[in-house]
Length: 305
Length: 220
Image (cartoon, rainbow over all chains, first blue to last red; front, side, top):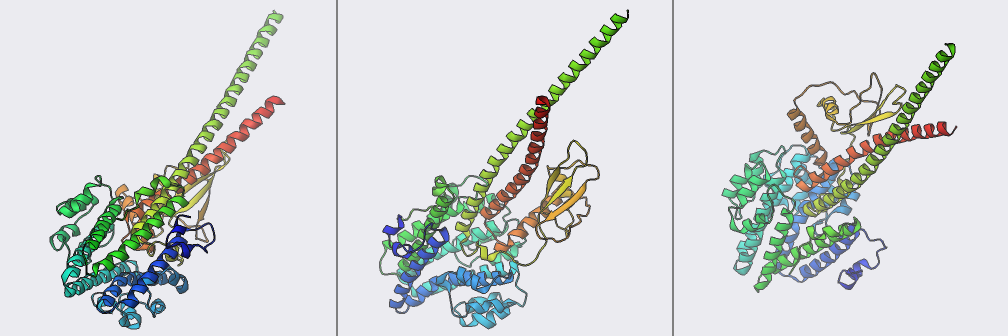
């Protein structure tokens, strides 16, 4: 009802009641994709390349989704329906026939923008859950580094603003990898290899994060860096539940600041990321309503502007 | 003299009857109290199950928010055949008093690791029957599995349990958010509560039958 008065209204008006969370997210994402394509078709170089870089993260997620689902003997069509529309490419369905990363690269990914990112993770080992996870994070690391280099080449305000935003993204990924790998079979060396080669935490913070065994040790490392001290100060000891929200809030703050300057491409990146945050907010609110837990809405909603 | 003996014996008989009546009434009251206790436990457990499930579903939504919808969705569930990580054992008591089945949850039991028996002993829902008839219900297995005996330190068991938990979450990736692990624990607790509810319900129904029989006997 509230969404009907917004630009998402036309996308949801024909959906039958009751609306499910997945339907709301799907239609709002559709609107985002149309807005993105509208920007892309009017962009010239180098902005068009910049806009395409924004979608490579979703492409990586889609590749991993197809490969993981195929490993679990799921139908390819079912998996394709779950892929993010921003990350689709022509030969994506062919991913299902690959048995290892070498075949993945040779059969499908060599002709996609992700091809250059595969040089670090091509092996003949069969794809299993751990290898897929390492592949996901290695690809994303290569993508972030490439995007960072591209923005540095553009120079000016774009380089300044994007290096701050991408550094934050790299640092956040390093923290999440460290926390999520606690208690798993991922070795310290493998964990360190998944951290990006830029960012505030590179290289000394990464050395310390690689050996952390619990959330309090991660906290101890991060509190040495003033920009992250404020994030971790919001959490009590041993707690990690609110960390995601704290990171999202910091990200939104930095993305909003991108609009304070003019004549740079960072506003496009910030616009897309803020729209994704808006959709995440809608997803969370609709989940709380569906589960009759409206008192928990403020646990994960991040206010924008 | 004979009259005095007769009076003495009739007094003794009366006293014996009174004692039996008191004993009978005490047993009736005990059954009623047992029934009310089991009813109270049943209602409390239902409430606990409801709140645990609510917490689990919210934690799952929170994990989805954190990791992204492409990483947590039904399309990633593993359709390959694999043995059940958790199974339910049904034991029958052959004695007249407790003539009812008893459910026991065998969590994270694996024939490869062979520590399922240890987990059974640690489980609070213990059986204390002599030579019960064992029926083993597993989610996927066609034939009953034998759980081999094993003796391991509690730390080793905890470590194995943690590995099994991680293994079952691996369909969503090996590096998952702590929120997803919390959701897993909540649903695990809910499963234990469900089994407890089943056992308490059986006790409640059994004591309810006994109370009803006693009431009918009294009225008759």
